[in-house]
Image (cartoon, rainbow, N blue to C red; front, top):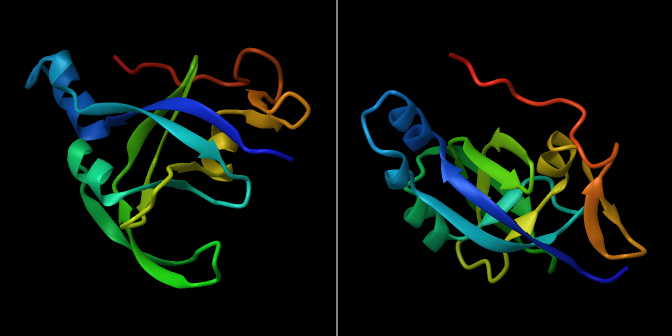
Length: 140
């Protein structure tokens, strides 16, 4: 199987709540649209230190991870952020790998957005069609 890459948008969840409460305006929500490699060998979303700072994320803990070269590294675990792909989204933390040269989209966000890898066409597709099986309902 070759590499599958896609584009996602990440948003600071605290900023989203502040915008909903009228504390900040919607254009002030810190967000970034990035290219990621879909990695079914990775568990979570992996970002680097620069993107972590750009999004203004907080840290909830640390995790020891194994890298592709079998080295281990202690990484920051971020507070939740919103991950968006096309018409799907999920809110979950990310791992910050200090000098990561690529961003990785792992299996937890993929499954949470009801996505799978189409290995024949090397792209992401809905596991159950074009629309997610469930959608979060905006609370009023």
